[in-house]
Length: 220
Image 1 (tube, rainbow, N blue to C red):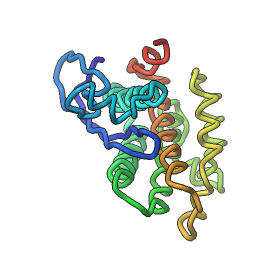
Image 2: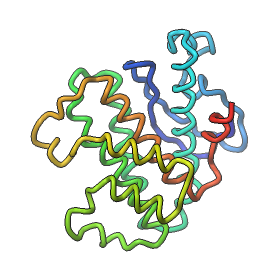
Image 3: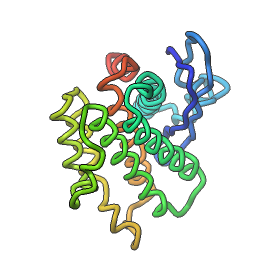
Image 4: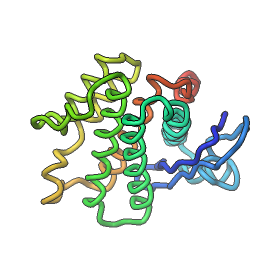
């Protein structure tokens, strides 16, 4: 697994048990396995955390791949268009908030807002990177219409991830309302949404960066 020069924070989950992922700052080409990026001391410890279940281990590996692609992809494209980079960095900051909170919190309603912001900001970043005026999102209510943003991103730069991105954003609660009242979601549902928006963020940069560990992992 090639690792880029930048650090980032993301998450992986074994059912509803969430683990914060911290990307090591590495220079040059270093080969790391998913369990090493997840900061386990051994593959055995990682396997036990995955409940010795191959399907859970596969989901964890794909979450690590998304984390890798978002971190390294952003390193690749961040010099190209400052307005897009600002939005991606804000998305990354919200993802870090989720990754810092979910492993230990019992109250997860407060995490809904940053989860939705990860999806919104990363999709807007991709659109701005491809020439959309950032100010155009401020007109009307469409700036928070995540399903519409997903369709626009797919229309602008089609990708194999498009169908899953649309499914994920369609499952997100109406988060403007979630500021004022609980969304009523169980912890496992919130964990799945968090992993989903990490995928959306990764997909937003996979469209224009070379970082695509997910493709390698999907092929295995």
